[in-house]
Amino acid sequence: MAAAATAAAEWQDAERKVLVARKPGFGLPTACPTCLPVLLYLRMSQVPFGIHVDTSFPDADHIPSVEFGDCVAFHNEKGGVIEYLKDENILDLTSKHPSVSYPDVLSTKAMVTTWLADALQYELWVVTDGSIAQDIYFRELSWPIGKILHWKKIRDVKQQLGITKINAAEKEEEIYRKASDAYDALSTRLGDQVYLFGDSPTDVDALFLGHVLFVLNALPTSSLRSHLQKHDNLINFAEHHKVQLLEVDSSLAGSGSSDPSSSSTPRKRASSGRSYKPKPRAKKERTEEEKKFRRRTKYFLATQLVAVLVFLSIMGGVDSSEVDNEYDVDYED
Image (cartoon, rainbow, N blue to C red; front, side, top):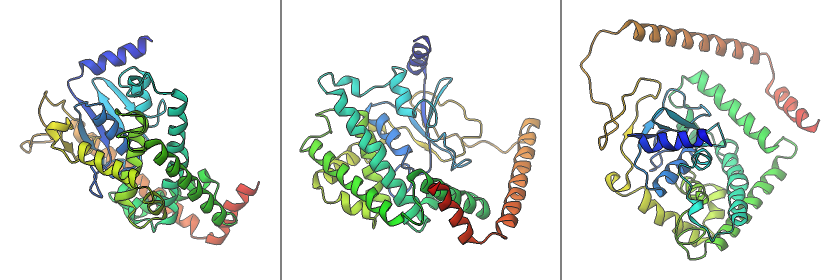
């Protein structure tokens, strides 16, 4: 309780809240399917915040994060940013619905975070040619590092979804069937309402809206999009809230501005009511600390290159079919 009170007080006192997210793309303020729902949740909560684009660690699992005062809410801790904000009594849209059945909210949320999330992961990493994921996560990385990280992510997603060469077709049918069932249920739940549970939003609305907007804008020819487009009210739901939350003037939406620089560099807290974009500075001689940082960066890149070369030399002697067979055996055990 004391920790929650401290975090809530820090949130109230913070002059600036900052969402650290991946870069924009596909006509969206962030092209990342995990960052977008957090951005929408903050917009639905009518919280003024800035957006800082992290390009240093594009595949990091702690992104998105929200910085406020001396506190940071990370994606890979405490159930994610939205759950952290709820648990710390900072922002909880669902609590504003005293008449809503909490089990209904949980069951609806479960469909979005499991069936639809799995289908989106499948489309993004397994079905497509990889160009969309490459643009979102790995475009800024050097070719060998980005290629290996992409390959590793595909393997991780297949493992997570239980996909092998033997059951691939069966798993695909199951994934799309569950996604279709989820869209049917959500369409029925929404009806002609503005939000899923009435006239004001919950965290489920932010999660689902982020999913729908990503599918419609980033996956234009996918099977998942085809299932989604069978429900006109879900499409209208997304288009309406996209205009309200993403296409209005930033000063009205309370969004602040974007800073495309790396979050690994020092950032000054912006003064109240000002842009988060840092002012240009005159070129000056580097300090000893900056020189040390650059040396460490070069050392890191050098070690990464060595690791890549070692990896490629090892994998060069392994037939790809043998790798796939080993992967399949792991699941049959």
